Image 1 (tube, rainbow, N blue to C red):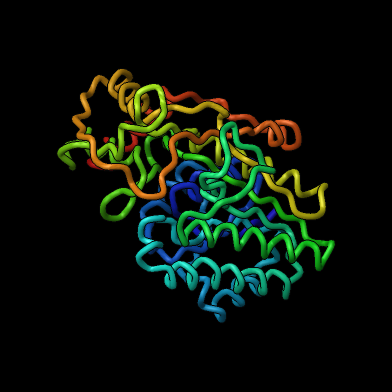
Image 2: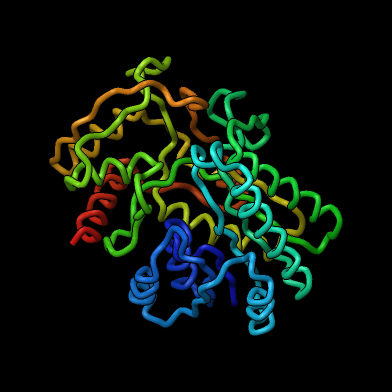
Length: 333
């Protein structure tokens, strides 16, 4: 089965391409390379032991998007493409509305034109905001704290309306918690441009000497050590969730929402200490003020995904830390 992967050279997209390709799917990648590297394509092909077709284009380019859909008869689409920095979205909301919402509308129109009505959408636990206490289930209230989260929720709502208007659509919305880790080969992983927005790549860059110390944003939360608690999930488990979701859509019409997390929360200091222990490296840090909009504790109730998709996170925090450091060492050579 042929699947279009938008944003397929990005962090989660690249791991999902490997997972799908190694399980019988033919993957075609679109990526505009705004926060990824063409070098990732070669590493994906090595891991898959096959050539992967790649289109360097932006989903805002309607002509090239139509060309891709006219060239291939797709079974489904997995949609990762989009901007993803909550902080940047506060400063540049129109940029996020344009790129995240506008590109998704273009994609959905093209899918509808070519009668491709299976979609897995990359959403985020960001949509839950601060109105609920963990473990967070899919029916929990949503609360938007920044424009990035708003674009995710707005796309979810668009997809719900689309599936109501046309019963042939099969849509899986996956709300990720906090992906970290890397492929165990150490050849693909998270390599953000500029200063990392996420915790783990910041830690690995401190470990490699690229950055002097880690800034911990707040130690006065109501948690066991004062630092924020999150549900960290290995990116390989997350990639497998997309495989399970695609298979699920073969037999399920309509719109389906799933949390993907481990169901267990770890604090920032838990993560730092585990990284230090498994990799025998000291991570210097300093405590800063809280970041506006951050909540104290968030972790998932993923029982629905386990029951309906047959999916469950298998990898623990130690493996996430080992794989992240192996990737950082290889990518820094």
